[in-house]
Image 1 (cartoon, helix red, strand yellow):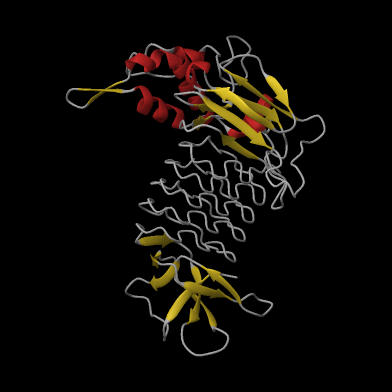
Image 2 (cartoon, one colour):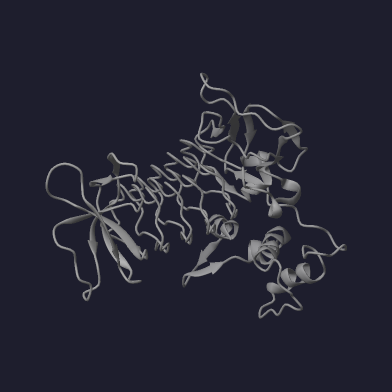
Length: 393
């Protein structure tokens, strides 16, 4: 529902008595009503809906759209709502570029056979492209710029140099909305196959960006969101990340350096992977709290530097049953022991201390992590000595 939040912030009017007036767009414009109706359809997909009850007149239009087949599944009558294309909005004129070869010494990102992207400005004609485009004007009186496409790879290959970057040429702030899956398969984006879709570095160092599109995919590829918003210093709100099963390095440095980000999304995943949260919020100095980390089985480097440099965060809650600990005294290789914390949530103090991780094959790997101290509940028998926390391996 980020689109509704953004609309309220942009067009809502505060009246005397702190009354928020929204009828100018919520009651009087059908487009926003269609978007809300679509969101109901998305959230109740697969459920048997036999009726909709409203308690206020503003809900009648939404209910009508749903029940007359405007957007409900398995209907053939009524107009169909337009897909939630990735949409960029700016109050004053701005320019859009999408570079398929940001590193001139590396290979360019290429689309698969028969695949393509399209853009349009102000609801005009769609323009197809399969390679870099530059300085497309939009915003202000020109209207929004929208993207859609058929690209099974998304906008990047994997962890190598084959990725692409979106940028803006002017100073005007840019908000982004829509569903990122509409550039994977706009024709059936709700069922798009995202197993190989990656968006590595797509908005890398984009200071004009203030909001993000939705990332509702639950099937993730390795490195899929690596460096996605790295250096987006004006980004204020993070998108929801509903995936329960993660892939290796999927969120690696996703919000690195997003210094305006105040709220982190919930991280509901219970099936982690190697390096999945590595450096995810590192350098987010405005981040005020950390989400609960519910996974009970950890993987190597899964939380490495996840909140490194987050100066306002005082504690992190982890629900892992088993933690790997290592001694903090003596010379030579650190000693590892494993402790069961009996389903009790444990609490960590966040610092930027240097920790160690010892792989099962031997040798020592050094990795900066965000956790330095560990507390158990009062009835837990603490191990002897000074202990620090390392990733489970």
